[in-house]
Length: 375
Image (cartoon, rainbow, N blue to C red):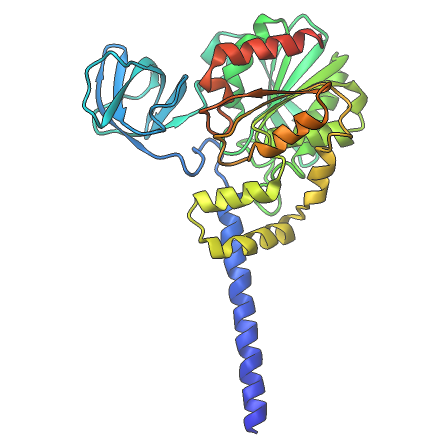
């Protein structure tokens, strides 16, 4: 009897530990794979507004507020745009003064808590940039996908697709540049985005299933006059572009890829997201296994899509060493393996998906040179 009781106790303990591990894994994977579109990525610190003045704002001093470039500044009920650091303006040692470019909505008051974001604009191409556009519903695998179409004279279209923690408004940063170069642009929402179908599990698949929505956008573009398309993705959107280039039935129409902060190693990105959301390091292996089991994510599929030997179209990669969400080592390896096909534009001092923000002029010049050869 004692032996049977001990055995039963051991089995119950094992089952209890197993259930606890499953629950812990689900918790950790939820933290990484349930990002809210438009919400700043985890790990971006909040800053305090200390003062404002004509064309300037004073923020808490730190590595984040000292970043070079131009960024959105978001807080409850407010969205503004800040430019470079103003070194010649008197300020306290624990603060930094940046140029205040504009306030889209709300009021920046002393004491406001804000975050830097790569997204400069809110609204539509018309309201944000004065660009005529058409609101479309693109037929997708799970239902219709909201999209903006900005017309252009060329027959090569650019299809833009955002990444983790942003919305299609992120593409507004470069939409003006693309329009100036007469390129038609199709900017899409995909599954899980506002107005788009919700995936059955409610989770991000880091591009592994979402790419089929990008494929639907390619089909729409070709049906409506595009002879060729260039896929332009940020973060997981860049992973979607790689999947589409490898597996789309219309991959022969894909003329090139622009990959900004690409997620090329989903396990590393999932660990980074979970860590940034303060998941204990002991739970990270459980998070990876749970994510794989819940979503079907498999590293081999992404590795195959990002295989340098499998690439068939010119590819421009914007990435840098300060990306804490998607490590840039795989981007360097990709460029090193196919130097005649892949161009890596290294951007320093820029967080994930903010490569344009760090130096818009250099970024757009690299983009202009790349696109000129394709259109």
